Structures are given as structure tokens and as C-alpha cells.
Image (cartoon, rainbow, N blue to C red; front, side):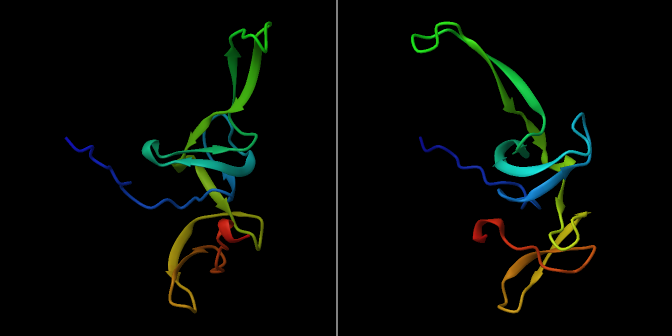
Length: 119
């Protein structure tokens, strides 16, 4: 029996490498760079935001065990992209650029948001 592949329900307004601000929750107002987007759960990990503490068991290499701080995930709806031109949070849309390709743009200024993978 073949395993079913589930595709995401929609495209996200956030990509890995974007600078974002948290607009809701315990980390409201904090800014950071997106480290990972978890498509299956509609969540993202943001550098230095929503820190959680993990208890690490003792091992041969670490006989004491330890407490490790890592980033927790935040729901995508609680994040807004920072417009590179103004440094302000903005909503995003998609429109055709001069090459005829869909690209994200800032709804506040109308400027295109550069793709973080091409930086």
C-alpha cells in the first residue's frame, strides 16, 4: 500500500531567512530571523524567540546531563514580515515582477520583498 503524500493547504507569507516580528503570544514584539518553517503544523521557528528549556539525560559524553535552551515554534499567523525598505512590519501579497514571475511585495509600500534564499 502506497503512502499518501499530503500537500500544504496554502502558501505561506513567510519563508526561511525572513526577518519577522511576533504580533501575538508571550513573545509579542520580539524580532528575529526565521530558522525553519514547519509546513505540516503551520508553524515556524524564529531565532531567539519563544525560548524553551529541554532537560538532557546524562550520557557517556555528558555524565552530568544538562539544561538546553532552544527555540520553540510559533504559529505562522502570529508573525509578520519586516519590510526591508522601512523596517516596519507589513502584510504581504503576490504580484508579477518585470520578468513575469510571481513575487512577494509589501502592501504598505508596494515594494517587492527580495527572496531570502537569493541573498
